[in-house]
Amino acid sequence: MSSPFQPSLPTSASLGPVMIDVVGTALCDDDRRRLAHPLVGGVILFTRNFRDVGQLCELTAAIRAVRPLPIAVDHEGGRVQRFRDGFTRLPAMARLGEAWGRDPQQARLDAEAVGYVLASELRACGVDFSFAPVLDLDWGRSGVVGERAFHRDPAVVAELAGALIAGLKAAGMAGGCGKHFPGHGWAEADSHVAMPRDERSLGELMAADLAPYRALDLAAVMPAHVVYPQVDDRPAGFSPVWHGLLRREFGQGGQGFDGIVFSDDLSMEGASVAGDVVARAEAAYGTGCDMLLVCNKPETVDDLLARWRPALRPESTARLSILWPHCAAPTWVGLVDDPVYKAARARIDALTAHAPQPAAVRA
Image 1 (cartoon, rainbow, N blue to C red):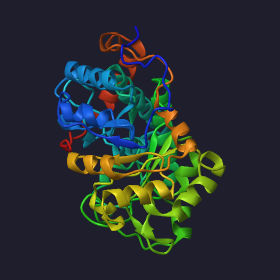
Image 2: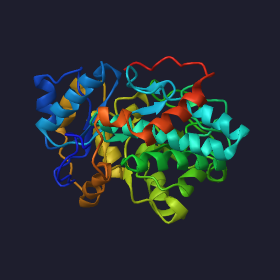
Image 3: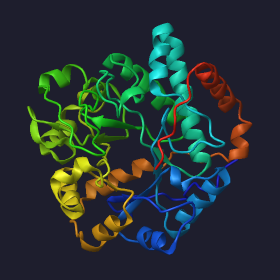
Image 4: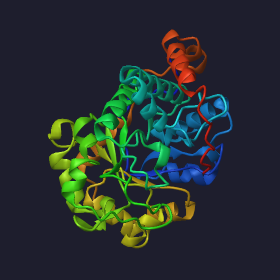
């Protein structure tokens, strides 16, 4: 059964370069005003936007009644799972890394099952895209990454992330968003509240943290709000050096990346080095980001939409079509009776049966 949330003729032509959030579990007049602005090209949802499956379906339908915008969420598993009640409790990616140590082939199947369930449940509720997977390596240094990372070995990260992306695609979702380029696993500070630094050389980063970005077919990449002073004194999201390297030397097989580059949230402290929100948007878009996230501060969104007048790049606008799913979405009722979904759920249940349940990140 198809879902009413699948756009009939998705197009990137009318999508602006800003992805914003909404205030609560239902749209208010201010939300509708912001969503209608031509600079807006997508919506990101958070835990505060979720009460239950039925309410989420109503919210995504209400957003689409204003404009046919792609809807995204940070829904990784573990402590970063925005929707919980009624959804499958997804494991932290570190659980898949541990499963690799026991049986690599079974771990690949587990990772694919996680991707399939993650994408299927979101799509049944009208959500098109998830900002996953995390490709940061588990160096044991970054508290903000921690169990969100699959493994310390970049080859294992690439294998497990590739299997998870295969699951996303099997459910109709685009091929995932690799984050946080070129790697947030070494820097100890949390870019939500500080400016992290990674003092390693480009050669060191190429040999380890950057390897998955050459191995994987990614729909999108999100640069880190981290400074790598041996490469550039600007954070990666505002760095022409890092954007140039990404476009020229990464992507699957190192043939160059032509997917979407998202900024990380421009409201985060790690973005403050660029100035106020308009200066941040100018810096990120001018550097090469295709879509800019501005979240959790409605007054900052209003300021940006009122004052920013970018010269839009046709190639960036065209890339945004990647966000749309490539097949009709299931209904929730149809999904829970689907044998492929039930088999994937069983794999996840077996994987998480003895794992501690993490606390949700509330936002």
